[in-house]
Structure formats: C-alpha cells, structure tokens
Amino acid sequence: MTDLLLIVDVETTGLDPKEDEVIELGAILYSVKEACTLQQFSTLFPVTQNPAENINKISPQASQQLDSQGITPFILLTKNWIDQADYLVAHNAQFDRQWFGRNFLVQVNKPWLCTYDDFV
Image (tube, rainbow, N blue to C red):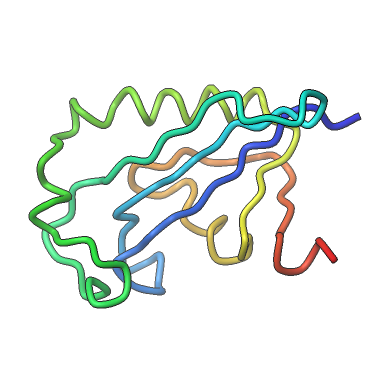
C-alpha cells in the first residue's frame, strides 16, 4: 500500500529546462495512512534573471536573498523526502518532473502521479 507521497510544485524562469531554471520549489510530505501533511516547505533558488516574473511574480532580487549555503538544507531535505516517498505527485507531472536532475534538484527514480491526468 502507498503510504508516503511527496507533492511538489516548481516555478521556473521559462518552459525549457535546457535554457531556463527552477526559481522556486514547494514540497509537501504527505501520509496517506494518516491522511495528513507531515512536513512542508517552499524555497526560492537564486537566479540572475526571471523572464517569467510577470507570471510567477518572483523577482530575481528576491531569489538572490539566499546563497547556496542557505538552500543546501532544502536540497538535502528534498533528497531525503524523495527517498522516503512511494510516489511523487504534481499537478502537471510531465512539466515538473523534467526539472529534477538539473541545477539544484536531485534526480528522481520514483514513479510520478499527475493530479491533472491521473485523478478523476
């Protein structure tokens, strides 16, 4: 039985993972058995520009408030949660999953569920 889900959402500086960057990650570790959120966080990642600022409302200046030392705990926590989770869940999993394994986000070798395609 599925017990732990890692629900993720990324905000990016554009649509192309080869050219653009993740500027924000939100994550929720959710227990299906207990039907509750166990932990959650949201963090910005530093970027020098954000062509999608008019969409995601995140200024590059805000993203630069944390240096790589400040985001390291979130990177490690994300990896730990991925290791624990049975599935990763995203609203548009096809979009979100392509950003993992690039820049600050670790590679994911777990199955994904998409709330847009997989849930009725």
